[in-house]
Amino acid sequence: MDAETGHKPQKVQVERPVLDAFKPGTRFHDAVDWYVFDKKLRLLALERIEVALRVDLSHRLGEKDPFSYLNKKTNM
Image (cartoon, rainbow, N blue to C red; front, side, top):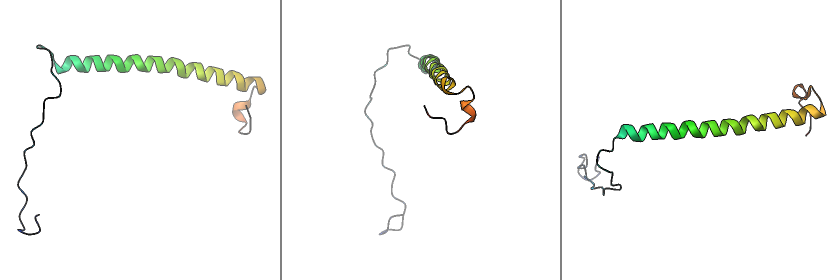
């Protein structure tokens, strides 16, 4: 509400510049497919790194004590 008039302010239409130029025949569905492919690829790569880190951590803890995962005070 406008404090002076007590009315709702008029909507202002903002012109937005076109930020991208797309090739003819480009579909939003195609862009989504590429996004999903990229996401799956990244997850696969990250999953491999995560598994490698878990294996290394488990190996190092196991060297100190085979039951170190049960002991909260095990130091690396």
